[in-house]
Image (cartoon, rainbow, N blue to C red):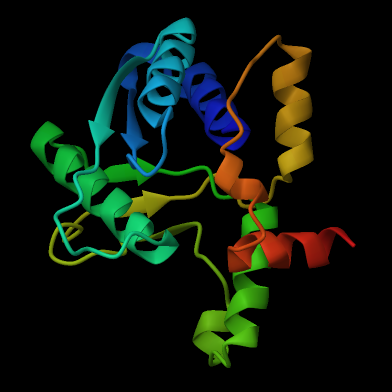
Length: 180
């Protein structure tokens, strides 16, 4: 998505493209996802960053929903990061994601810990795959629209996941309420 492409470009400018590795997760949940992953890999290549596609495999009987996809995404990212000797995984969560998360947690009756939202730097959220790995969220102060403006000003392209517009998902409904 646009947030991830913006993060990739910003990090390449800051740390040098040769010092980064992009990991693209294909959740394999819909037709066309492999093609989108290949396009995302090309976006990374355009920024000079080496990229690798990681495809989630879904064993029979596993319920495929957003929670399961999130867990599978972090497990595959953490596994590959560990193989590469990386200690930190940067993700493109933004201020918009933070607001959505806090509102969803409030609706679920979360305690003060949950209502504190996502930390800018935190342990990886899966165990044991994430043991001794960290998540960095350098874009938590940025809004989606600002990141897309940044990309458009520089001729950047990205892919919008159709699931991000599907109101069957709670996060999409919360996003709509916040937009209103």
